[in-house]
Structures are given as C-alpha cells and as structure tokens.
Length: 422
Image 1: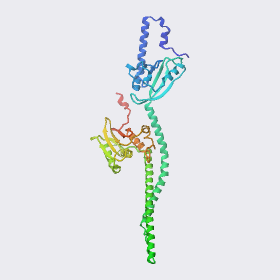
Image 2: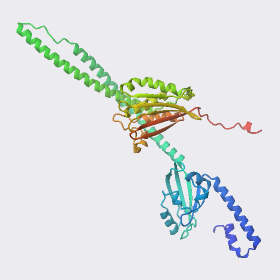
Image 3: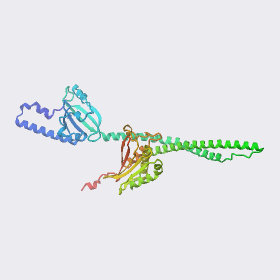
Image 4: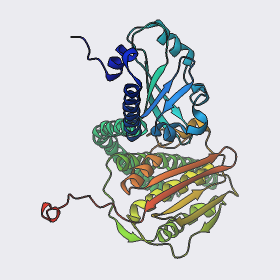
C-alpha cells in the first residue's frame, strides 16, 4: 500500500497552476502547520534538534535549551560540535551520506548547564536516500532512569547478600563464641598458675636447701615470663575475636535494616551525645573538636539512635584519617525545608578515583576496615528521605554533609469522588 501523500506533496504537484490568492492560502496553511508543530515540539519533554548537511544547528525545541543550555539568539547556525563535542559527527555524517535505513543511538554525560545523562537518537532527514540533507536528533534525559537502575542493581545485590548473611553469621558466630569462652577459661587458669607457690620446703642439709631455693627461683622466673607471654598472646587473640564480632555485627546491621522510628528531635542533641560517647577516643588520639552548632535549630523527624550510628561511623572515619593534632569540625545548619550536619576532618582526603566507590559494600581504604560503615550511613540517611554530600581534597581533608527533611513525606491520596462532584 503506497504511503499517503502529504499536504505539501499535493501543493508541489500543482504549484505552477496556483494564482496569487492560492499561493497566499498555501503559505497561510504552511505557517499554521509550522506553528502547530513548534507548539507540539515545545511541549514534549525530549529534546528535538535538527542539523543540516554541514552539521550546523537549524532548529531546536525548548527542551534542548534545558538539557544543553542552547540559546535561540546565538545557537542557530553554529556547529553542533560546539555543544556536543563528545559525539563523532564526521562518522554520523558519513552514515547519512551512505543512505539506507539507519538510526544511531548514543549515551553520554553533560555537565552544563547541570550534570545529566543523555540518550541520543540520530536519524537522517532524507530517510533512506543516498546523500545528506541533515540529521534529526532526539535527546532523552535518562538521568533518573539510570539512577533507578543503579538503585535496583544495588537492591538486588543487597538482597543476595542478605540471603548469605544469616548462614554466614551463624556459622562464624558460634565458633567465635566458643573461642571467646575458652580464652576466658585460659585466662582463669593462668591466674591460678601465677598464684601457685613456687618455693617448696626442702629437707636435708643447708647445701641441699640452698640448691632447692635457687632452682625454685629459676622456675618462678621462667613461669612468670611464660605467663606474661601467654597473657599477651591471649590479649591479641581476644582483640581479633572482638574485631571479627564487630564485623559480623556491622554486616547484619547493613543487611537487616530496621525502619527508623521518627520523632521530633534536635540534631544538635544527637551531635553532642555522640561527641560525649567518643570523647575518650578523641582525647586519646590528641584530636581537637570544633563545634559550630546553630542555635535555635528546629527539630526534625529523625531516629536519634540511628542518626547517632551515622555520626559514630563518620566520626570514626574522620579520626582514622587524621594524625595526632588533627581537627574534627562539627557543624549544623538549616535550609528552607531541612536541617543538616557536617563532619569535616583535616586528614589526607580521598582521591578522585576512590570517591565513586566508598559507599560500596566491603570497599575500604583502611587496613582493618570492614567496608560497611559508609554503606550503613547511606542506608540510614536514605531511610530518612535525606541525602549525603561529600567534598574531599587530597592533602586537605574530607567533609561529609548529611541533609534531613524537616517534615515527613505524607502519602498522596486521591481526592474523594464526592468532593469533585460539586
């Protein structure tokens, strides 16, 4: 079945027979259709952009201005490569010249006017014809879809880890408990061994008694040395068991989250309680704490226990990133619809290639880290409908900023049908 001819095809077939009035009618009809198409293109969310055979911009709709920052007064007639240098426009032009049915799909990121992930579709204006008259480009903002995909992948990965967590925790937890109990029993026996009398009453002459005392003294010294070494070894073993137990606990907290119990609470109180909790460790490391807490900070719906867990993880990361004499700066503030707390250190900072991975489970830059602390932080903040901002400079330090909403998100309900029929 042949394709239907358009209005323009009909006009071109008899344009030589049109008089002035007929031409005026045609022009008015074309202008009306152009206005309709422009209105239509400007209402859709995807960007529509047309370039000519020389890859220069001929037309673009309103969505393109938002995605790429083009301005109508200076963008038309300019090379498309000025705005999208990521694309190989010579290759696309060659594809168009070769003819044939072809649609090209590309994905890339732009940073201006704001960071976005763009999916581009390019098709020749002249269809399958050989030669080139330009390209029609469709720009789709796939940022949110990409983020949802990442979140779905992360959710599936966490679910898979959760299935493994119960059996692993059980299989590791039971031997750890047994080891811990037996180490305590060994400590008790060592205490008994240390308290045993080492000098026995010797019979016989004076020379025999002196020899017995000398031998007993030697045995006592050897026993004390062995006991001290055993206690040292037991201390190391207990420390390692406690560390393994901490890793398992963190693992279960990360994979078996509990919903936050939201209550109006001052973020300042949570910060101060956390500082009090970790003050001995801060002083032991020789770190200075600077508090810049905003007075009259409004209460926000938060779970103070879970938020304290967030701050403990961030504090410990900051402490381990600094040497003696470092400064830990704690600051709170408020915005139009939320409150925030920041934790800043003066450590070595995080290299750019590591920033994108620090929230991944089991990824850590510390020798004895579990790689789960920041994952727990991210999960709790998300459960509060908040967000995490990170700024780091190598050699200068790192700042984590936690933003939390002032109000709970209430579910949107459909209007009652009876209220609409008035």
